[in-house]
Amino acid sequence: MEQAGVPTVAVHSHVFARLAESVARANGMPTARQAFVPQPVVGRSSGELRAYIEGQDPINRAPFAQVLVEGLTQPLDDKDMSGLSFERTTPRLLEPATAADLHQYFNAERWTDYQPIVLPTEDRVAEMLAGTSHAADEIVGRLRPTVYREFWEFDVEKVAVNAVMAGCKPAYFPVVLAMAASGTTGRSSSTTSQSTVAIVNGPIRDEIEMNYGVGAMGPYNHANATIGRAYGLLSQNLQGGSVPHESYMGSQGNFLSYNALLVENEAASPWEPLHVQHGFDAEQSAVSLLLGGWYEIFGGGPRATWQEKFTRSLQACDPYTGPVLVVDPIVARAFVDLGFDTKAKLLQWCVEHARIPAREYWDNQWIQTLMRPKAVAGIEPYASMLSADPDEMIRMFRPADIHIITVGGETGAMWKMIGGGPKLTTVVIDDWR
Image (cartoon, rainbow, N blue to C red; front, side, top):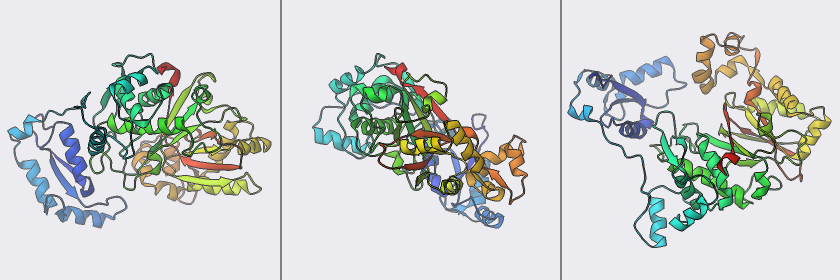
């Protein structure tokens, strides 16, 4: 509308002021007219929301209605129409400096995770590039921190720089490239502080000596630790940043953003691997990514009361993001003894028993925002769920929302439910060798 000469005003809550300014600038609209109301908005009564509108704009420090009317009625000037050129690249080479100065510079530019890095010299990057047959200037993919920001496109060399910084070996590089090619960021800017859970399958697990046994989810393996870290670094650096208040808005943050990399223990599992479940060959190496990571629930067993324990745990999961059920091989074999000889059977049991009252399901802000419009449009099963009696127990998940993998070293019958996400993306690692 502004291109047609019609003034518009964007309305945000006040905690997003810096983000709104950053997004407007990044999209060539540095003088975009903005009005702000207080946060929070979700969960407030109509009277409280009306008070926002009738009250002060906390950023512009003027009555909200005045800011809105003036923004809509004042003609656009030359500055409004000129836009702004926005540089979407970073320099390939830096001026020579001491190692200490370079480390300090990388931190100041927010190119690190504030842990020590390996400086990406030309020689080190060249060594990393030897880990793939792909050309340095080949485009790998595009990333962005949120749907409201522009995509950044990047090549193999830029991924290699981040892999070097993380401490990866060249043999790990195809895994890092596959993660980068997924289009799923490891530094999402959601206010919910979501992270990304990555799951590796296939022969490459043993080729590069990844850990899927004792301590698999801890800091006890070089490949696991550095590949996971490289994914986080490339996500923030190749999507235009991950800066609090500007390109990262997670209210609490997430420990899993440091490293949420899982490797399935296929040899000890009585079930088929995750990538085979989704149509890939067992001899292919693949990495699957789920944007979620909001919660973790822990348990042991299955014991005599496992059904009650599992039911309560499933009900405690967020209904928008089904869990990744991570089970030790001992647990997997125990479930087989209980009649669950396939993952599909256990998954179906989980779907049937993950039920909560309809009113509780629809009282979730993400369900209200993302699922209720589908229900109102008549899309099933959401339409029937919306029309259910408030006390009726309804399903929280579809089969596609829950994933089961076997991880662990058989020292204890332990399992976890980790928040997954509504979309699983799997990339073949072999394509990036």
